[in-house]
Image (cartoon, chains in turn yellow, blue):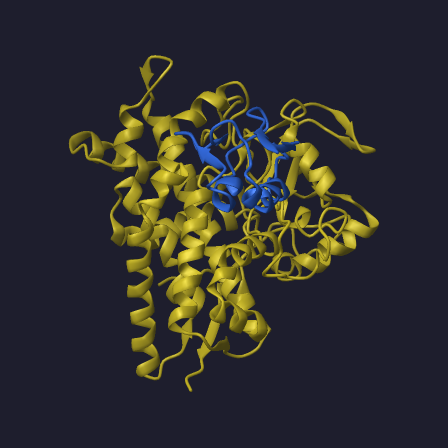
Length: 412
Length: 64
């Protein structure tokens, strides 16, 4: 099991969050809620010169407006980093997340059916068995007197296992996939040459998997993508690889983060945990509230053309971070926005984005999150952080969640 | 009372289908459709309002 260190930044520590923010500074995700609250009150669209110029809107109104505006903003690159990919619009390097209209619509329609709620519901039994196996292993560690970690021993294994099975990739390569995700989503502020080398490693792996599927076609998403037709033709290998890259990257540490954050909340809020254990009927609203309060995903856009946005002079090819988690905490949109209410009735949270790029895997993410939380609290009704909140290690970059979450199970 | 889904606004979040499966179904692409003509029986009025209150895209409306 690999524990990753934050990359060495070419920029150095942040000096001021309103004018020099950096989502790859470890202090950002650790203190995200406080940073967004302060910016929302003082500077609803912040700017930093890092990464060639980056904007950070933090209100629901501004995040929403950009999410719906596919004219002034392009999705051709969605990971703010020291490297701007040269894949042009409207396709981008990992369609459909990197695609713009009208191509986006047609590419997305190829992928929607296998991720529809009814198709995803068929995976529930397997997710539950996987959770049981992980919990059994944690019980064994407890019995042996070893510490357990809800992120390293539990959350991080669930989505990678499911997406590997869907794609028909070797389950034993899970550490490799987490490495890819780390390279793409966390190693964002290092030397550009190193980032480009990591892209090449990933491309080589994916092309080898595609070749393996060409030699041995099987009933999985990879073979489906290699067989499906768009505009009367099969997809070229590099596009199949791009779509797979999206599914791997977007499907792994996003849900891992949501599961981890939910367990973090339950470890630090005895009242909510006990209430949820006593009344499983609250699970639906609780899960949606965890998604609102701890939404893991900040998306990004590139400015497509020079324009004025709420008084901000946005220049073509500057980055724009789209922090849906910050939008979810905006008191102008949500009552008691800063409180986690596990029975919240009205909850139009934007954890899965807004507009045409709504998270393709949202039904799978919800299933994994709900089953993971249900099984965890069924097995361990009483648990707390092992140590203090400072012993929790948070991710860096656009995906926010605990990467190390030591917990201690309390047995009567 | 009747419910309506604006197909242009719906992005397939599936919140309505999860909260009120008696009133909403989803197509093969995961987008919401109302069941039947969208008429809401009295016992499902609260469910219908809950679906409206949880649609992130404001795609669901109620008419009397």
